Amino acid sequence: MATDLGGFLEEHREAVNWIRKPVDLDNVGALTGQSTKTIVFENLRNYPGWRLADLLFHNREAQARVLGCEPHQVVQTLAKVLERGPRKFRIVEDGPVKEIKLTGDDVDLTRLPVVRHTERDPGPYLTSFNVVRDPETGVCNSNNPRSLVLGRNRTLSSFVTRHVQSIFGKYKAAKQKMPQAICIGAHPAFELAAAYSGLHDDFWDLEYAGTIMGRTLDLVRCETLDLMVPAEAQIVIEGYVNPERTGIDGPNPGPATYFVPARAPAPEFEVTAITMRREPIYRNHMCSPWTDHQPLPRLFHEAQLYRMLRAQGLDVREVMFPPWGGAMSCVIQIAPAADGQVNDALLAVMGAPWLNTKLVVAVDPDINIYDPADVYFAITTRVDPSKHVIIVPNTRGNPMDPSTTPVLEAGESAINHRHPAVVGKMGIDATKPVPYRANRADFDRGWPVNWGKVKLTDYL
Picture 1 (cartoon, rainbow, N blue to C red):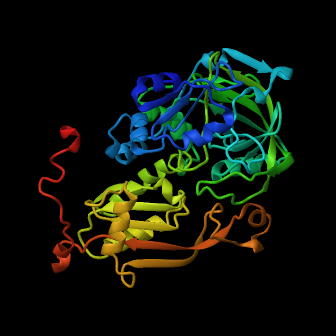
Picture 2: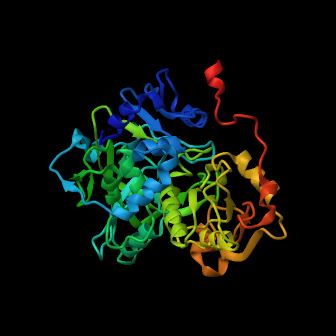
Picture 3: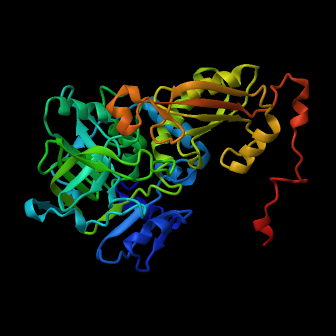
């Protein structure tokens, strides 16, 4: 099994759209949004020698390639990763990411094929995961900061997870710069691990990468910082986040593809070094329309919810945050055995501590959870809105949801970042009556003879 991005793409060549014709950087996003497969651009105009990859997590098939399982086993496999726990790294002296080292006047972010995501964006955005360290505990943490490139050696960095926000807050309170390394183009197992946002005060979330891959992975020390980064990454950008210097970040779309909050203050990231491979692959995370931007941060959430619902004694088959739900909606596939179980599950998902899930729909195992049409069918034919809909008012809202109401009395954070905000939540029980209900048979669906047994492709 490959342990770097290039090797991973080669292992799954048939699952990749290899774009060999010349492509302007401004066309990357529109082309990415039309691809149903992982995509690699091999010929970027004005960036000779560079390649660019995207869509490593955009559907269950892509996620299964990262986890080494079947598409229908993604959530269950990731739940087992959580049960096994994090795996420590090995520290090495050198690695492929050190083949080229740029410091001082040689640092130039404009040499990287950083994508401008929409016409309203003020500039190009780095979107890969970072490495920071808590100054009190010494524990490292990672998330994907939105980083607007301002010039050769400066960006703005916006932090979205509570762990990294807390760490940055400690440096800010001490009036110190926060060391940060942005890692671009590591094996996708690193990206998935960086997206973990459950409680992890005593371990580095990135350590789940080794658990996902079933092996001990290598880290190497940065050139200008006392931080460790994946030795086989494609590019690492090193520097310091300065809480004393800020700029206005945005607009840039969130997971729902809306420009909310449109503009907000963000600290400057002062770049001190760039290290990279000789023929690097730039990893882009396109923000829209429905790409890795929606499912990647929610994958571990799906696994955590799966474990939680199983602990409630529910026969849960699948949990999914559909990309077309803007990362704010969850569909759970369960086989309830008794009245009341579905409502318990809906309330549990709506109230999960690390989510702002506004809409939760429960469906039966005979509904294709991946097909919006089938989910819609379940809602329209199995729901009496007067009985099967739960509405909870005045709950935590997602700052990137324009339908929420910021609590302006909370001060600067609410005014600038729409946090905290409140919104109602809705749970929909779109399951059939439980097995002991006499009217359950009314919900049997009519299918052609031999449906699911014969395939049209065999006759073409």
